[in-house]
Each structure stands twice: as C-alpha cells, then as structure tokens.
Image (cartoon, rainbow, N blue to C red):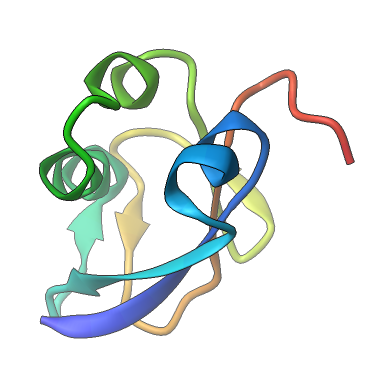
Length: 83
C-alpha cells in the first residue's frame, strides 16, 4: 500500500479533517474500494460514505468503477458542497 493524500470538503471535512492519507495498492483500486477503505477507517460515516458522495480524481469527477492510482489527487465531497 502506498500512502495517498485525500482532500475532504464539506461535511466530510468536518468529520475527517481536510486532508488524510489512505493506503492505495501499487496497482491502484476502484473508487468503490477507496470508499470501503475510508469506511473502515472512519466508523460511523457509513451512511455518508455510501450515499451521494462525489469523488474527483485529478480534478475530474469519477464513477465508482474508475481506477485510483497512488499519487493522484483525490478529492471527496458531497454534491452540495460550497466553495
């Protein structure tokens, strides 16, 4: 696992902090797997993480089956987050 920085915004940032690191396999993982890893680290956020959470990879919105590679910029926010 390679430590990869995740930027959190909105309500998620209030709960997890604005930045955190998560281990991403060298070959990458899917956005869905990334969500599962976050859920394991942050119990009590299952509903928020399973809901309408938006994930962006290198500033582009990504679907659950998109591949996340170590070192990419990953941002996580709710769809109604403000700037």
